Length: 428
Image (cartoon, rainbow, N blue to C red; front, top):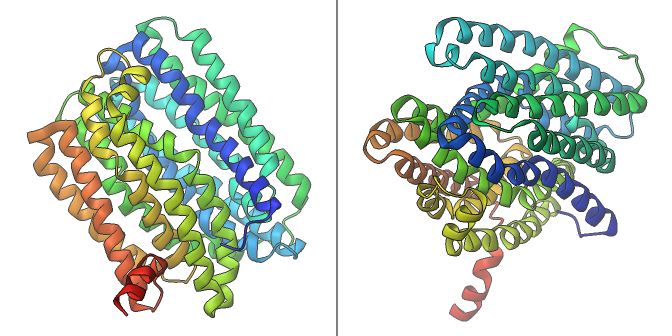
């Protein structure tokens, strides 16, 4: 990461407000929602969200990284920006057709989804907001304020809507309905602002341009797919092998982990990626030094979060989730190392490998981890339920970090080398 300036601090605060809206505002609703609808109904909502996450993965197709990188590297070329923008939007629309077809098949043939068709349908509707809101564009051009302001406003309204309309257990369908409505409104507003930046014309937009953005996103899409084998698929396997309550206990704890780290780590990652994309493209020692500087921020942000989760797991669950979610405390304690492990994985994988054009290495590591996770979960979940699933997730992330560190070290890039310097001085 380049030296911190006032602009970077302003952008970081903007992105933090986005994550506040995306994670902490929904987290505010959890204590209310889980008390009204109970762990079982919350598990049903979480199961539907896990299934739809795969469909969102199809529509995203890695564009949040590849399109961001392309926009960041062509900020000064308005014609190139227009071509990238419209090619990506058209590609996402085409992929949404594929996702819709898959959703229709699931509704037609999967009994568990048919039983909760309304929950699944309303959860899937959020995909249209995903198409319209070009987060990747605002991130690439460095205009985080527009994205942050719109996102915060709409998410706050969606959160208020949950409190207003979810009044009894049978209202659980209204929870995904509220979030999807907010997603679509945010998408429409974000799309309008983006068009003002690039105009209505696609410039030299043609089939080749669309194919080009799809090819650029392919390796990231596959990597995200295999990563989901040890993240999203855990919830799906829990729903298939255990009970809806077990899913609720696991997802309750995992949402706390994501919400706590999202306020700091996600905006830090989003801020670092376009900067490192430029630095590492230029090559030389400057990019490597920038990656090493970024590692200091990543560790400084993640280690305290892991410590807080480990020390205060039980009271955090009691306050946020309440009665009926006591098993989530042990799950949260097991998941406590995740903020640090996820930060290190992001640093070496997303920031390092991808910006150094080492997509194949990243894919190989995540694919191996995904297959290992599936195998371990199939064995362990029937034996230990949600706690076994949590332990497998932490182990998998640890192995991913170790493999990515080794992969970059073979390229002569060791972002965490500064940690060892004091020991080397003492040894000499």
